[in-house]
Length: 342
Image 1 (spheres, rainbow, N blue to C red):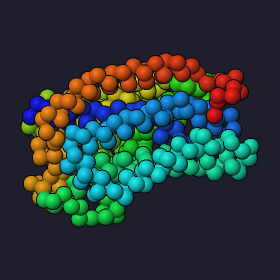
Image 2 (cartoon, helix red, strand yellow):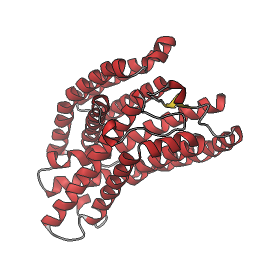
Image 3 (tube, one colour):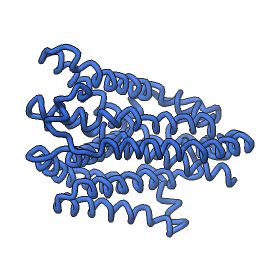
Image 4 (cartoon, rainbow, N blue to C red):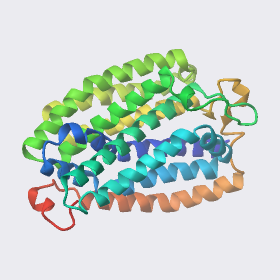
């Protein structure tokens, strides 16, 4: 039980780390058509994400890899039941990646607009789909005792799932605007903070609506009612959300970004802890749910993986922290003039 629970917690944390890190560049891409008024501002937004986005997506691969190795049954059910949205997510991420590299290959405004459009779609669509997917996992999906999914893509587009999608889009847009505030200067920096302040109340409203809908559509609160100390996750999410707004008002973009990262972390863990011990709840019969017990690998596999994770994850964290330190400077016109700039 210890190994299964440990890997369940790590599974949830890895998804949270992915949302925190890739969330800001998904937010930047989604905001691109609405914030950038000229070519310089567009390139500033590209270069605010460019050194980080591929490293950030490592955590998506890691979260998927952990699902495959630690909970193979959950991986099989998830990637068959959610095949259509995951395929759309994959193609969207591919086009987003290509847009970074292809945008400036031809000196043509029309060419750049095409790839700007792909960056927007390749950022907005994943944010929406991730929210829809996780909301559906929270409320349960129609799987039977054999793990066969009895539904289609349109069944996932239910009111609670779409509300989760809206929540994720707003959450990532707020995160992206704050990161742009960290990386930009002057008037663009001030506008980024104003945009973040403008998104915040919509994110608050979506979060309140999602929490209320969660009580109606899911049983996530059962674990919290059974173990009241777990409520700290909800309290942490509320406190960090409001401190984010305070730091935006004070002009502290980086601290506001960190505070919003805590919001994302606590919101993700709120859902994951609420599902425990289920990984993929079934809304047909609870006995059909994939749990950490009936979906886990052998104890030996989990032990070996834990040793590997404790060895290599700190190396990845150290390397990524070094990258963030190297590229911690604000983007200036001089930076955009270099050959390395996007």
